Image (tube, rainbow, N blue to C red; front, top):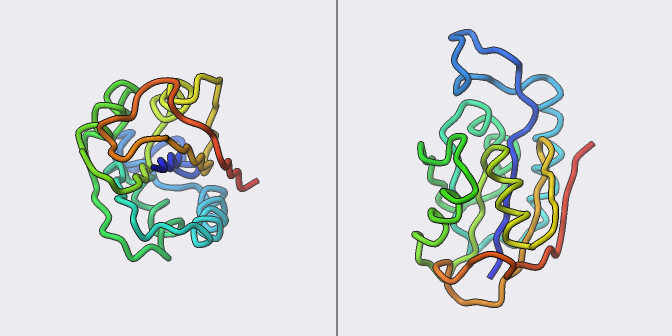
Length: 155
């Protein structure tokens, strides 16, 4: 089983509304997201369930980075600025044999990758890590079980 963890591309420091959840991508972020999309288009995501935080910056990252994906994509409010523990509970709760891709935020995304692989991992904006597990269902994934098989950084 594979788990893809993507961090959103670079975002503006403030939003027109003043709310963090509404921060759009910066011009650098758009370039990062396009490069991330080029990378994602090389992945075989046919048997992959895709879950995306509902923030503006993750939605915009999805537009560029996941444009080649024909999979059903689900936007999840509960993935907005969530902790690594909550992310793991979300993954386990999907109870699926499919691979999983999550497009979300730090610190939770990096902390989860570190916990699952038992090594320090820092995901910068528009990074993607692919972690492999020797299990057949997402409800079996837990700490120190994962092996990093790929890491993408756009710039």
